[in-house]
Image (tube, rainbow, N blue to C red):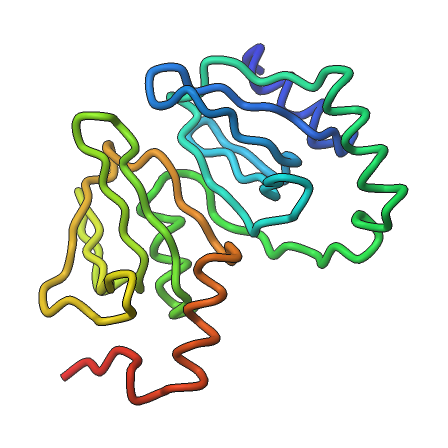
Length: 189
């Protein structure tokens, strides 16, 4: 077992709140609770400003450090005292062997996801539904901020994906919008 795997297993087992750094991708830390991991991917329950914000899947290769220090412990204690830990729903298992396996599984759910290449030179952000996958890339039906679906699909190669967000508050709001206004939702012809 690698050193990182040992650390991740400890955090997963103990339910620690962690801070994840990806120095080559962004200056912003990602915070959450480790749910599962593989040699390729890590899935966390994401925490943003003391609000649970869905799940995030990150590439292991992008992680430069992961830590659970005094601040994380205090924040977890505060969340517990506010009752924010007792109502968390169980998370289904996701295949984490690689991006293709994960995204194939997600495609069957037909849920809105956020898929990103956060590298500063690329900076791709897709909010939409998976259209198709092949051995090298994923194609997504995606829409703009005014909830208008683009006529073409966007694509991103698996080796460029840095983050996948599932059930985020942002995506959930659009999901609710499309349920209220089904005529605005994607029509595949």
